[in-house]
Amino acid sequence: MSAGSRLRQGLRALFAFSQTVDYGLASRYLSGPLLEAFQRMLVSEQLHSLHVLRLLQADAVPSEDLAVAALLHDVGKSRYPLAVWQKTLAVLVTAFLPPLARRWSAGSPRSLIQRPFVVSAHHPQWSAEIAAAAGASAESLWLIAHHQDDAERWRDHALFCELQQLQAADDAN
Image: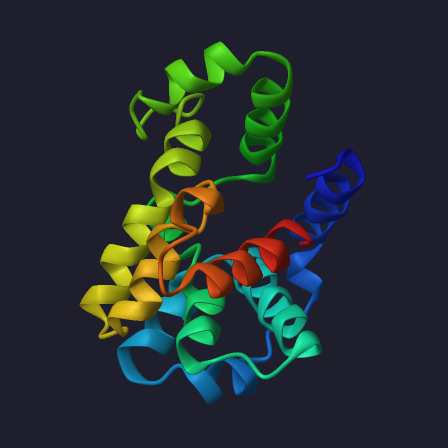
C-alpha cells in the first residue's frame, strides 16, 4: 500500500466520527449475529469494510461469500480496538524497522505499544473465529482467514480469484 493510501486511510479513521455508516448496505449481506459482529467494530473499521464492499460492487456483483468477507475481514480487530496513533505507529515501524515489527507482533495485545502489531498479525484468524461463531459460511471464513496471505500461495484453491478481489479492494482502501 502506498504512503498516499495510508495517509487517506489514516485521515478517514481520524474523521470517522463525522461519517454515517450505511447499515442498510451491510444488512443486505449480514443478518442477526453477523450484523451484530459488524456493529461491534469501530466506526472507522465499519466504514473501511463498506468501502471494500463498494469497490467489489463497482467491478461486478460479488458473491454472497465475498460480500460477507469484505464486511467482516477486520472484525477481529474489535477484540483489541486501536487508537489512530497505534495504527500510525504500526505503519511506520513496519515500514522502517521490519524486524522490530515482527518481534512485537509476537508480543502481548495488552501492551499499548505491541498491541497494534499483534492485532495486525492475528486479526485475520480472530476475524474468522468471530465470523464462525456468528454463522458465516465456510467460504466466507476461508476468505477472511486468508485475506492477508500471499495470494499466490493459494493459486490452486477454488477461492483464489475471490481472494485476489478481496485483497485488491482492501489494499485500495
